[in-house]
Image 1 (cartoon, rainbow, N blue to C red):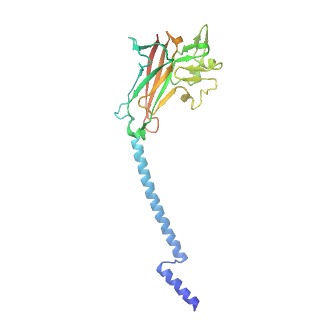
Image 2 (image 1 turned 45 degrees about the horizontal axis):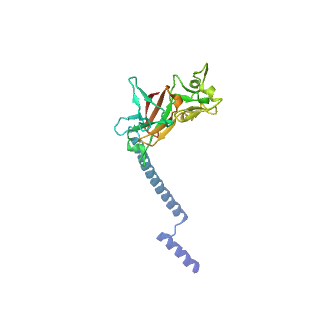
Length: 251
């Protein structure tokens, strides 16, 4: 009699939905899986739609006014007597500090290219003026700013006294310093993927960049050029590069 009552109780539970037969339970689980698949597809579509919108925003021109501009000048605080002659050369003097400063002003980026208010802008500095051992200084003719990381260009002959050298050859004996603040050594890899990044110094995430270049008394009467490459948005999306050069005579 007890077994019969137990059987009747189980049947009532099945009918009430509290307990399901194995067949019914299998169907119930299939419905749950179907629902989860639908929910997953909906979430996936929303995410894809959001990503598509973000990519569309990254197609925008980097600068707010639709025309990226940048200007650079020699800081008069360090060079109070600086002036530009009729040939476009700026004249500076070594009167004490062993450097001169290049200041800049960069156009503002679209908000898509700012992260928490930090602009994705970069300025890279270079020059054609090098310093070697025993205060030997020289400029490189046919210099390609930011591009002298390939071996063929570093083999450009440099006249020193009654002989000629190349930067590659000179670096075998002692590192060669660029007045922009970096050096070329015999350990450098000229054809590695990262080689280009080694040539130059950088100012990043700043609308008012500045850089100090080396200067000393032995550079008097020398002529040199300093280079600035500004990259508007160095991350995903549209990018704009602008190169500037300032020609200098040390009086």
